[in-house]
Length: 255
Image (cartoon, rainbow, N blue to C red; front, top):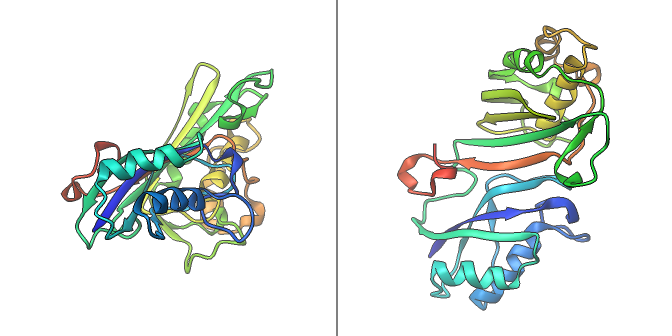
């Protein structure tokens, strides 16, 4: 039987999602807990790997098990074994042709910047601090150049293992809520550090160090070395993948 699970996690204490030979990973903790419930070793496949320090509101994974455990048993049993920073939100049986990664049609991220003169004492793991005033409207206008299908080489880390740099950005928005500047972006898929590199360049626009048109120039130039720096991982949350309605998954991961 194939199961899909929605998983929330605080990535602060992990080296990222992917299981590693050394260091703590979210995948290893999830597999250990679910294997205990199933009473046999399990591997899980995720919709999109997250880097060290990156959080997830609703990561989606799938697994195969012949244990006969119900979705309720997997959810409740796993949560009893997982550390407090990881929680299974839901679990449901799925057709055998469902795939957490390949069935997804989009992924969505949020990046939050605390924009004030004083550094944060609370929620430091979920924010990036910027002391200089930011023009969120200018950042939003500049970001619209990124919408559509493009070669995103200018926003791709040199360590990216994707076979090509083309991605399709469906939507990107930047707005202010009091002393926070928030960016949300949805695309069919993302390159390594792509969202954090978007933020790093948009910060230069927000501070007035670069004009709004600069982001379009970066995109066209395809040169990572002239773009802004990679923004910190704190502040980045994987909101989750998006699937066609035919899979009957919860609304938060349905297009």
